[in-house]
Structures are given as structure tokens and as C-alpha cells.
Image 1 (cartoon, rainbow, N blue to C red):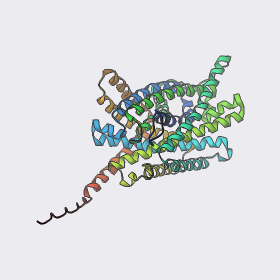
Image 2 (cartoon, rainbow, N blue to C red; image 1 turned 180 degrees about the vertical axis):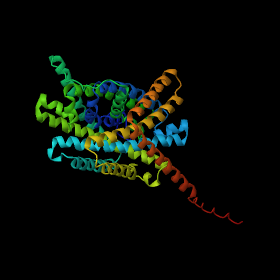
Image 3 (spheres, rainbow, N blue to C red; image 1 turned 135 degrees about the vertical axis):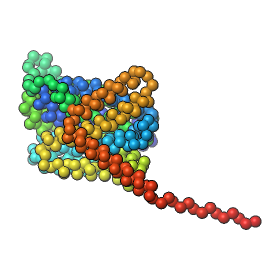
Image 4 (cartoon, rainbow, N blue to C red; image 1 turned 90 degrees about the vertical axis):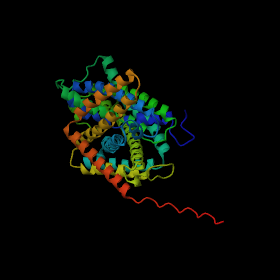
Length: 438
């Protein structure tokens, strides 16, 4: 079970990819969006934790069919069109998520270096990170996997620190902060669920590398289930702790709520170190997303669903063109939304990416239900399907409509590619050598 010797990812790198891509920027930025929801946010974390584990189980079941990519596994059950829609939604969700992580890196960096404060500077830092990590991923899948292992060890520190502060305050008899006085309502819980659901996405990235995971039918399911369970519990505790440590209005106006939570207890110096760890966490998440997004574009190009240029590789079968295209889309999304405030930009991007994930999860869960043989497995998958429907309601109308537009665009691109492929002249076979005369 080592991760060396054949340029493929083993259990440790795959698990690090799962944990590293889930623990990115969302958990550290989400308190800003969740604080106004009060107790609804805590309920949202609980609902999301249960729902995401059911979805992780469904994807783990599906991954047991093989390591040639999630699109291929869905195609076995529902055919090429449904498989393409899932893969396209996955691809779109990933490069949109890259934008949210880039914004979070820039926002946290402004806490460390005050001169970087301001919307324009935050975007510049985020775009610079996208460019740099695209270059790292161009080296190969093991370079990205190795970076994931390093960053995972760093990124859990701020989460554990905030949990410790909350436990310490309770043990000392001090009062917790009051949650925002918002009544508990289905609509508010649904919004909280959609936001927290996004923070728990990312485990699906383990299904993206096509034929680049060793013993994929065993390694991928184990990495998905183990990594997701670990992060779900950690998030439930850390996300709740932040709302108990800081006033709601302070959270809403903070560029780095986790760092601010540490200032009052350990001082500015420790908070800066925590903010640096958070930046590294987001940096590692962005690294994993770029890896998965490049592999997805490469896989769809191999199938003729995207332009063949995206299937071009370099070195250890690294899809450089696909990585460049996805990173370019991320940068364009950031530049196209410069008029939004940092908080509004982040929330919009989070919900749009979540809408894409929901499409992937719904189709994948349907495929897992069809391929499952036991009542127990199918019951868990049904819970996953119900959760995705509830999360779709929580993403709101704007994000859902944009997701439908992007899905329609994907189908149009696929139709054009298939049409061009059918019109292309077939290669002329070489003439067979003439038979020798007798």
C-alpha cells in the first residue's frame, strides 16, 4: 500500500486528495455566509454531514466498478448521454469551485498582509495562485498528490484549534456568543444545507484520475468513505465552534473568521500563523481541484465529447491543455464578476458550484442504486437522492438557472463535436501489397 514505484497514486495519496480537496477554503470562509442564519446553520451542518456520507457511499459503490473514471462507470448503467451530463456538471463545478478557493486564498492573505486588503488585490492574489498551481500540476499527477499530503497535515491545525477554544470556554464556565436571532425555518435550513453541503464536496475528485490510481476498485472507495467521514465530523465541530466564539456581526464582517477567533485568546501573532495555515489549506484544495478538473476534461476529450486538443498530454500522461483551459475558465469567471463585493462573489460562486455538484451526485446516486444488489445499499442511496433534491432547493433560483444554462451549453458542444466527428473523412487504408506473380 505504498505510493511509490509506478507513477500511480496509492491509498495515502488518494486519501490525501480526498481530504485535501474537501478541506479547502469553504470551511474557513463559510462562517461569513452562515452567521446571519443563526441556529439554522447548525442544523444545516448536521443535515449536510448525514447527506454527504450517503452520497459518498453511493460514489464508493459506483467506484467499485473500476478506475477508468466516473463517466465510464455511469455509462455502464445509463448510456453515454447521462454519463456526459454528469461528467460535464462535475467539470463545470470544479472550475467554478477553483474560483471560490482562489477568492478565499486572496481574502485570507489580506489578513496576513494588510496591504493586500481590497477586492482588486484579493482577485490578483487568487489569479496568481491559479497560474502557479496549474504549472505544478503540469509536472504530473504524483507531484500534485505529494503536495496534497503536505498541505493536509497543515490545514487541520486551525480547525482543531478553534474546536479546542470552544471546549475550553465551555469548561471554564464562560458564556458562548449568542447566535443571530433568526427563527428556524425550512427555507433557512435549506440555504444553510446548500452552503455547508458545498464545504463537504470534493471527495468526488478521487474518481477523476483515469487509470492513475493503483488498485482503483479498492483504493478509491476506501479513500472516499474514510476521508469524507473524517472531514464531516471535523467540520461539524469546527463550524459550530466559530459561531459560539464570535458575535454574528463580527463574523459577517471578517475576512478570516477562524483567525479572528484566535486573536482574543492567543494574540495577533498566533492568529497570523493560523491565517497562514488557512491560506495553505486553500492552496492545497486548489491544487487538488486543478488536478481533478484537468483529468475530467482529458477524459471527455478522449471520448470525443470535447475538442481533441484537450486530450493532448505531456510527460507522465499529464493533460496540460485540459488544465490550461479549465484554469483559463476560472480566471475569466473571476474577472467577469469584479463588480461584486468579495462576500457576494464568494457566495454566488459557492452556490453555482454546488448546483453543478448536485447534478453529478444525483446521476451518480441513480447509477449506484441501479448497480447495487442489496436492500441496505439501495436504502442508503435513496437517502442520498433525497438529500440532493433538498440541497438543490437550497441553492436558490439564480444558481440553478445558471447551472441549467451551462448544462445546455455542454450538450450543444457535445452535439457539435459529434457532428464534426461524423463529417471528418475516414482515413484511407493503405493499399495491400500486390500478390507476387507466379
